[in-house]
Length: 514
Image 1 (cartoon, rainbow, N blue to C red):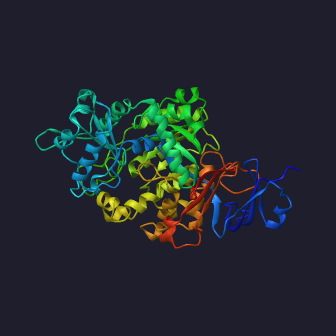
Image 2: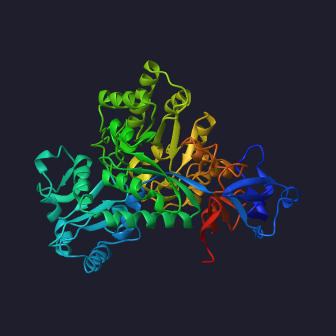
Image 3: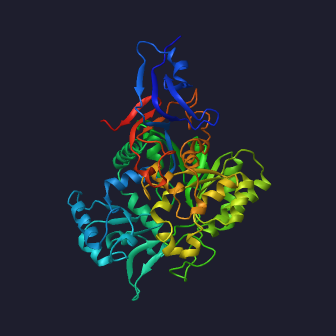
């Protein structure tokens, strides 16, 4: 009999296998879990070449899933100007000046992570200020949520303003400010990202994969392409995905069902946006925004158009998912799913809704009846919950209702955990803490339930629960070693747990010792 390659022992091994939740040791052979159980039972399979990994009191869990990232954009953002820690116009403009010194003449200036609420001025800089530091090149500064942006005059001149249906901000004198939302944001992003060469997208893939491995992530749902992003991102991922260290599951964000079928893919959607975001005041609400009662956000699809798309993809046997944040958008997508399922019954479709941030109790009940999966981002509560951005945009009452994870789970709806990177960092431990320490105690889940969202539930969300998501015999040895057990530390310190080692199919792809 062939001997095992590795044994892991000497710490908390949390398997996420309901039938065998905590074990003493795990063995691996040919990249798969051979046994998970008592060390005495495993030891007999050891050979002279078996390597024993001493956990030394650390914790091992299955490799994490991130069930919602914009993989290519995350890496591209790291190649541009990162505004995640920027706190003023002065700092922002200086970052841009420094970056332009490294660019070729006329090359696009790309910025990412812009959040005007984090700036001292609480607003975007003026178009004139941006033009001064980018006088001879296009500049595209993506807001942190991707649902609005700021561009300079060079890029504005490349847009067909007559073809834009809405979303161009103007000052009190009617002058364009450079801030674009809605359709204008989509058009500007397309023009800007078309300028990015293929080699940069290839480089971006490696940057994001390496960052994911450093945070214990071994499988990512990559939401690529479509109007909110660029189909070149999806094409790059298909071309180069075998060259990265982690597994990628592509969700092509296209309304062309034939595109998905032509590439042999099994799913359609992701951030096919039915509405926008709270931060950009474009998420579709039933009641007006608290800090701007003139708007209830935007629905980007008519009911008829959405129903035709869902019916077409559903009848082809595809798994489908849409971006729906506000209660008005959630109402629209659930109603359409109900109609299509009624007229074209199909078992086990596992259709999803991405974000699902402001559902009503009725929405949760209907989602459960349909067997929908909700792919959520608990880190949003960590960064924006309570009196943060949610409170500013929605007001105190609605901010208490955001991301009701407890009620969703209690209704029997499957929850998946993701980051929406590059909106928030790829870091499941922040997400787990966000779910366990939710700003509203009524919506909190247990650490076990939160860990499931980023492991076995993530596998279920893409039909992979038979091969990944738990430390069970026969599954791939996708594993992560943590400095502490997230089920045992205080909820406020989960994010501080360190990643010691990340293992993909039995091979170390990240070690803190390196």
